[in-house]
Image (cartoon, rainbow, N blue to C red; front, top):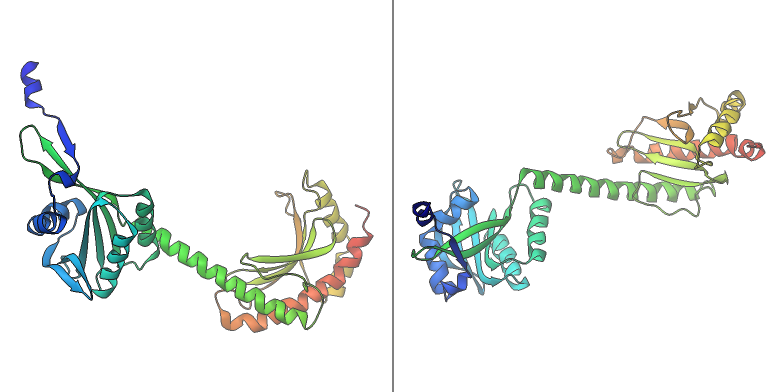
Length: 317
């Protein structure tokens, strides 16, 4: 047992500053000559191009190339990460038209780790950002050597999440713009929705004269609709079905006054029910269809209000 213990040594970790006293003269020079050590940790090929490359009044620590010949910049900071070096990292990336930015540091802050994660999620798919911790490790009597640990870096999942976020943001903007235009047109024809503000959701509603019952506009990617949404009873839903059934009994007269057929959705597997008219002639994904679709929806909402509001008020449910 004693022989086995002698064959196993415990690594001793030190701050990288204890080994490299001067960042530029010592560490950056060493890294340029041993770039393969960092490259192996990152799972990529790195070839040095120039140390202390000028970028205006600044100097990037290392300018490299990857296996495809794309520029890679490395910014070294042997102490705790700060905003100054984060700004430099982005400045060098943009001005040198680099595809990858690597921030090597002796002490990464969690706040900056989140920033690198955010950049990987929200920038173009061909851009990559790494936050790499470097520390000195010694085993037994061996000389200390730098040990690199990737704290934050790109991944397919991060890029996919970023693309989804962009899609969500784009949809929110489109919905807001759609509702602005629809409500502007609506005010010229009716007082319905006059006090409603545009939002980013897929629907906007106004009261139908009974608590929990609303007239609602809905916009989806390929279609829009107008509806009466019935959610008066939020405990059991029993009264919602009673309201729906009472209106369904008047279906012939309601559709006559509306001037068209309606979709009667009792939604037995849900608490609420609805009465709806859908329009398949356009949707959120096709802005060129918005004007005609909005005209259809506004006209249908006016007729839906006329056909349902008074009948709803007379119900004793």
